[in-house]
Image (tube, rainbow, N blue to C red; front, side, top):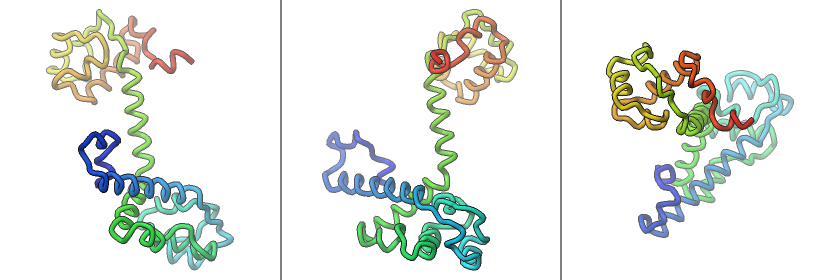
Length: 211
């Protein structure tokens, strides 16, 4: 997908004006429609049970945002748009509107990305949190006396490599060839469990220590 693959750095002579404009237009449309789904709510009193069962598989018991409904298995953008149209008498979300604004090809791509972003929002947020957590631990100092041989959760090869290189920080350990993110996580778990007393004072990421 073009707008996923490109970023601001693409303006440095790598993409012509037409493609850059298309990228921005699509990105903005995805953000706008995603926010619209989050901010548009459907009350059970406005959606007849028979209609809810037909479109959603069952009646809704309380108020839901369209984004909540889109996360349900088997529910797509067009279906939540129809729910919105019936419940409100019109619809702020519709494929037809996007086609008029963007053209059929771009509208189809925007809808696809909106569905993906909404359905996997929890997973994406979790990954972003993990990235932020990893960045926080980047400069975390490893104990000089750390006995890597005692980190039984790590493979023999990983323990050997860490013992040979003696990285000063967790970030340096992560950048060693053959050291996987899973290995770094296991090392961090080992240290946080208190098996290395000299690590205890530095066991919290910077934002926690400042709290």
